[in-house]
Length: 370
Image (cartoon, rainbow, N blue to C red; front, side, top):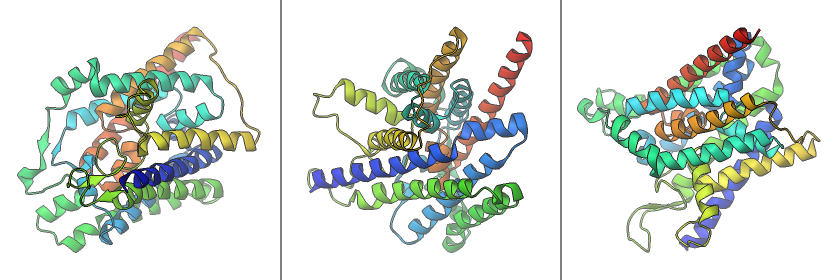
């Protein structure tokens, strides 16, 4: 039973990843690109598309939670102890790295699927650095210097670190606390559609909605369809085919590391296909399929040695930062934020700050070269 259920979970992850890849390619969905558009050109359209995806994901997760179909309090995003320094530092380094590497984790997968060899190199270094941060040399520094710096929401009387749980701990009713996701989503939606320029971009509106729904569907697959109240093998609660052993949705840093591990240790029967790995493969295939169908598939390489250095450094920073912050612009900026976890908002703030710093650095370099 559990084997067939694992196949169902990973198959759905692959299909949803394929939708993400195809749609993301079509509408140029990229958090890094949207931030650079704002910082360098004052264009907020792609930022609003990303914000729309956040709003849809928040509202969707709130609806699934209210219906009792999922419990995001069991995810690793909403733990009672928040490693705030890891979130901020990891987020900053990821944001800086994604700017050097010409795209966030999802955009790197999308570009690689469309024939960009630079993005393929970024993925390799991202995966290696992420694995080193999970279980290797970088991980020793993370565990010793960053993760222990925490605040415990238990001191506030809250069991979990998501906003509804904290609001309940302050005496606000369960109903009002549960409405927080809807309220924040509505506020974001008002901002998104306040722009006439954005309202006229049908592709971006559809793209933001679809990407947000993919995140919601990911939660439903792992936290509901893949949930076993009592695993026949262990007689304990189990979430099938997830690397974390907990409910999760899409993220594109640690799963790349686990994909490399699976490929390198293929004959080890303990290494299996998971939701995260299948999602990564789905994005690659979905993007490639769209690129081929639209005749936009193009091989692209490096322009210079400096270009190589920037992309390699970017991949390493993204790998370390993404694992340290427990997610990337998708893993924290959409999946994590959809749970209203305090740590996810901290990680997202770090990512935005890192991207801003990298843009300023690149402008400084450009000015010096003139």
